[in-house]
Every structure is written in structure tokens, then in C-alpha cells.
Amino acid sequence: MKILVVGYMHPKYDKRVFRTVKALSKNNEVIYQYWTNQHEKGYIERNIKYIPIYYVKNIHDNPMKKLRRRRSLDKDIKDIVKNEEYDVLYMHHFLASRPVAPFKEAKKRGKQVFFDIHEYHPENFLNSLEGFTKKIKEAIVWNFFKKQINYSDKLVFVSEDMKKDILKSLGIEKDYFVLKNYAKNSVDSKRKKKSIAFVGGVNRNLDDEKEILKELINRGFEFNIIGMETDYFKEIDHNATSFLPYEEMMERLSEEAFSLISFNTVNSRSYKNDVFSLPNKYYDSIAAETPVIVRNSFVSMAKEVEEKNIGVVIDPNDVKGSVQKIENAYENYEEMMENIKKYKHEFVWTEEIEKDFVDFVVD
Image (cartoon, rainbow, N blue to C red):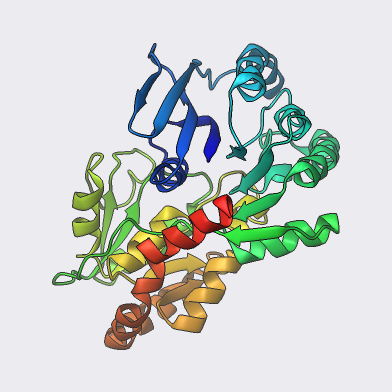
């Protein structure tokens, strides 16, 4: 079978996208389109035909200007969908200026279509818009989102909660697979420091979390930032590393008492793209045998953390209460560690999970 994977604006080695490419290419031919800001030539290696699409992002453009600039890029990718020979189209996103076109084109050609929905698109698309413009945008996106799903033969979601919310909102039933953002591998925990780690990029609106961190530092905790140097936490005592290779990042993370997973992609704490998220750093933390601190509005994570007792669920608006919950958890740390050792295999990518996913696509 030949599968066309459209990564759209994901870079070549995006963890989720490239994982699907590698898994599907073991026993099938894969055509892989990805984004790059370097001038690269396409090539074929093993069972994968790499098609780089060059585009320079300008983060200072307003949303509508960005959309206009995407038209030429989107036409190039639509032409790939139209002209390449394949049996299955696997979409990791949609074309901003032509959101339905590749789905429709593939179905017109009699191809199977898979849609990997790892973002809550009606809110995520042009997510910097606010007020009345935001409401109009979301109505438009829900309209073409429903068309995209109707054109799709099967769906892939990042979490069960996101699947339930989206399909219930649209009143649609589809065959689906939940592909979580599993860790690449697991490591055994090292001697733990009385510390809290923050892994990866900083998002906005962590002011409440800062107050919690300050109070915990006053009570003897360290705060460590892994994989990033930033001025965002400059008023808080901390240690920071630059970007680390995955294996080294996991080793460092395994030394921490807790991993703080609280972030805002936009200014709203009810933003569903965050609420239903199960980010890589969540799975990496448990796979590194490090309990997590997650905020209560993260529906999917908070429910799992409480059910399995593998961390602490906090309310960032309640600084005193959150600090007390973290200190209580630290005093009962061994119980959490026993649960993490019990459940961590569920957070790691395995051959069995890969086989189930590949069977779902090529069956």
C-alpha cells in the first residue's frame, strides 16, 4: 500500500507526525510532505519519499496576512494530493486557505482519507482573534471542519475526551483511533532532588503558577527549567539548561521530584485545545518516573492523574491550597512513585501500540 502523509506546517521530525511516517513505512511505501524554512531537495530513502515544502514564517504578520501568504504554499500541497499516486491520504492538519480541497480531491480520486486531529481546530485556527471576530471565525471553522470529517473515512485523535467532544458537537459517528503522545522510551528514576521542573517552551499567562513556585522555593524546593533558557521566569530563582537531546532530557527529568505541566496557548484558561491536551511532556514525565503537577482545567490530564494517583492536580488561582497539596504529595511521595512504576508502561510507545495503529490505517 502507498500512503501520502501531509504534515503541512509541521517540521520534518515533528514527534507525532514523523512517528506515523516511520510506523507506516515499515511495510508500506510512504510519500511524506513536510515544512522547512531551508532550501532542501526531495529524496527517497528506504520506503519513504520525502517532499519538503519551503516557507518562511513571519510571526509578526497579522492572522489574515498570514492566511493570504499561505495561498501559494497551499496550492503546491493540493497539487501533491492531486498528482501523486497513493492509496491512502493521511492528513495531519488542513490547508489554511483551502481547508476542504485535499479531502475532496482525494475522495474524487477514490482514495481513503485519514484525518489525524491532534488539535481542537475550531478554536486553534487563527487563535489570536478575539471578541466578535473570534465567534465568526469559529462558526466558519466548525462548518468546514464538519465537511473535512465527513470526507474522511477514519479519524485519529490525541485523546478520548477530545474525540467525544468533537464528534458529539458535530453529531457524527466515525471509525476512530486514539493515538496518544506516548514517550519514546522510559528511564528508571534517579536519586530525586526536592525540585520542580518545567520542560520545553513557555506559554503565556503563568502568573499564578509563578506565585506558587515562589512560595514553594521559600519552603525549600528548587525550580529547574529543562531544555530552554528564558527571561520569563527571571524574577524566580531557578536553574536552566539549553535544548537537550531527548535521552539527556529524560535523564535530567528523572532526577526531579515533580514536573510542572501548566500552560496557556492563548489568553483563555478554557481554551479547548489546551483543556483536552495530553502533551508530550506529560507522557515523558511519567515515563521518566516523575510525578506531574497539572492544573484542574486540563480535563484529560487531571482525570487520569487523580485516578492513577501519579501526581497533583492544582487550582492555580488558589496559591495557598495548591502549595499545600504539593507539600502533602511530597510527604507521601513513595505512594505516588509506586503508582508511577505500576502505570508508566501505559505512557510509552511500544511495538504493540504501533501494530494496532498501523493495522487501523492499512486494514
